[in-house]
Picture 1 (cartoon, rainbow, N blue to C red):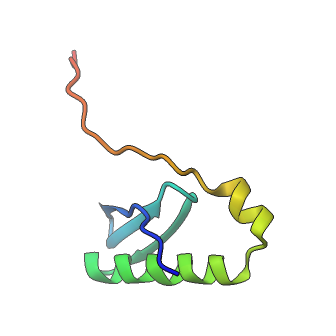
Picture 2: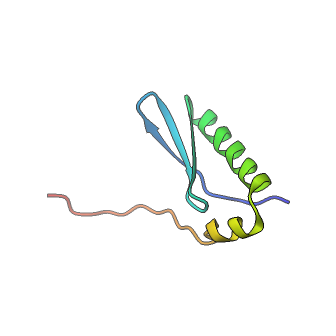
Amino acid sequence: MKKQLTAIIEREEGGYVSLCPELDIASQGDTIEEARENLREALELFFAAASPEEIQQRLHDEVYVTRLEIAVG
């Protein structure tokens, strides 16, 4: 079975941090591609090890990523 999830990747000191907001699972890597693949591996391990109850409890089915314009100062 395949499932599509969101990956948010941010540059941080010394590399990149990747986050899946649907499950609140994060990983990291030296490059964007590595951070993305490490997050994929972490998510696959989570689904392999977690009980159906834990998956249901943690999984947020609707996550929206957007940008906002705000006034500063």
